[in-house]
Image (tube, rainbow, N blue to C red):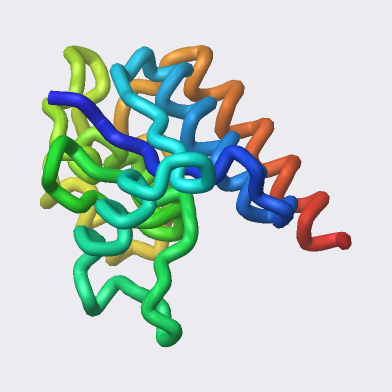
Length: 148
């Protein structure tokens, strides 16, 4: 299974570039195999991406923006759903992949109990040093973006 990340190599949007870098950097940090498919220089990639993003996931103008993520032919999501999965420590599930040993989530009942008690669930799986470092860098980038 190959994760396909549809990107725009020549995007004029700084926000899109940062989102693309975030997705690619995170996949590299987790050593997940993926392919970058450029929609700016390849019309076939652009057409395939636009046709295969589900209708309910497309913006009101009907044209989905990069990055868009697929597992082979299966649509995984856009940057926002990727970011949510990352925050929830469910990236492997989001991508339709089996998590490696040591990265399993807590049992659902334990997680539900913590949430019911009002505790913030932060580490619901073992986090590698690279993943932990990447999350810290992301939080810093988000703070910088909010300040701008």
